[in-house]
Length: 326
Image (cartoon, rainbow, N blue to C red; front, side, top):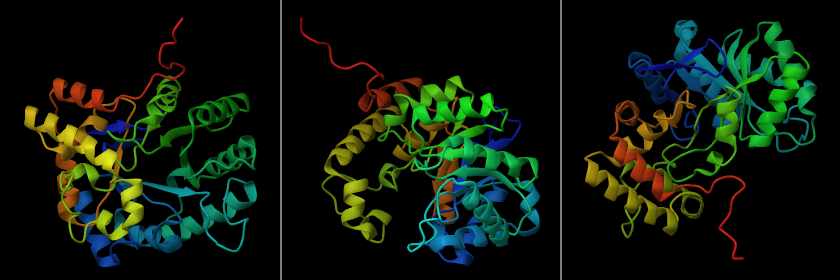
């Protein structure tokens, strides 16, 4: 396993992380624990969850119980700000009031007295970023949090938060968790350059587009029985396995065949090859998937394979469009 520093901090995380969203959603506690134990054996030390995963709390609780006495060996990342209640509007967001309650609930579910990386799951347009940062800074100073990060921020929000932290001498975010894959590359326009400039690591989620980039989905073929996208029906098709995306998969497969790599290896190792990436977060529902993801992520790809794959979905440069006619 390879380990990298998380942003401008001394915290080191495994380049392949374990996404714990399936815990309590797709798999039961016994299977979740088995995956956690195997991940530890294979060198994974970064476990990412959230308070809203697993029907609002199961994922955190199951992860905490699975780690048990080995908790000091790992980096636990969890998130707040997502809706924890369908009836109470104040049960989400980045206000001081909510953060102070949310962190205590997560600590209890995880069975720990500190969280290594506490991430704001979604931006909160109704709360000033200074209020959010001051509340998080207080929790860092109290020892309940080690580091803080954000998720689903835009590039300008990353910069605003970093400037606010520096201007007020507050602990700053060290990581940005955003959707990033060979297919979904919009963050490369602004967020990736901003993160690189400000020393903030990116933690890509959905690196395999919910299985679309594993190699088991092909255009014109029925979705594999029992697969995640097959179970999700219309939502899976619209969010991941659209006709346009399946066309891209075929193009990536051509690159893979040319260079003797698998689509899974191309998808995982491509992200690992990015210096701004600290850990690639992939959720799994079996030990076999876990082992395959680790092997794929640690694969050294031919430079030509990376270059050719990138050209298929290269995003436009920020601030530039097609040339105008005189």
